[in-house]
Structures are given as C-alpha cells and as structure tokens.
Length: 116
Image 1 (cartoon, rainbow, N blue to C red):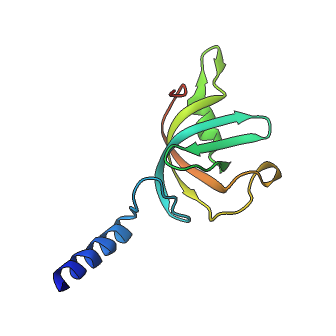
Image 2: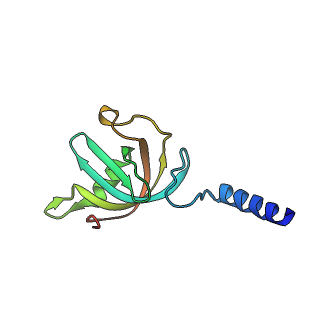
Image 3: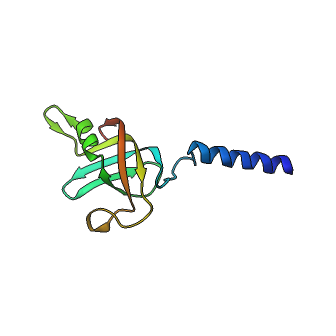
C-alpha cells in the first residue's frame, strides 16, 4: 500500500513539475502548447482547442497567427494552428463576452489550411 501511495505521489509531483496534466486540460497562467482551429474575421479572433469543448478569445499574439496565415494572393480566415501560449481562468472574454477563456499567444509553431 505504501509503495502504491508513494508511486502515485511521485507521478503527481512529476506531472506538476513538468507542467503536464494530460491532453484536453487548459492550465491557466502557464505557458503550454495547444493545437486547434483559429478563425479571424470582424469581431472574431477565436481559437478552438482540439481537445476541449471551449472557445477562446485570442487577446494578443494574433498578429503572429496572421503573419503565418497570409498566403500569396490572399489570406486564410481559418486555419489549423499549433501554438504556445498562456490561457486565462474561465470568464467572459472577447466580443460581447462570448468566449470561455482568453489566450495570449507567445509562439506559432505551425499554421495551415483547416484540417477536416
């Protein structure tokens, strides 16, 4: 029993230290990698993480995404993206408070046409 408890405590401590709590879990205030779909149009700067049923307002770092999304002859309004950023606690964010959280993008690792 003690060995199982010690092993479980070690796993929890390692996970907390590594900043990993499994897929589909937003960690407010911690820089973490996320992947999902980004939509940009008037009054919409929306990030939908693939592992969560949430919509996040992109507060800052949107210009990084727009640079990645720009293509010769036009620009994409939607993209599949892999980013690193900081997510807020839950609350009303963005246009008319319609978003679950707010995302501050620090780095864009990948952007492409939306994946189906």
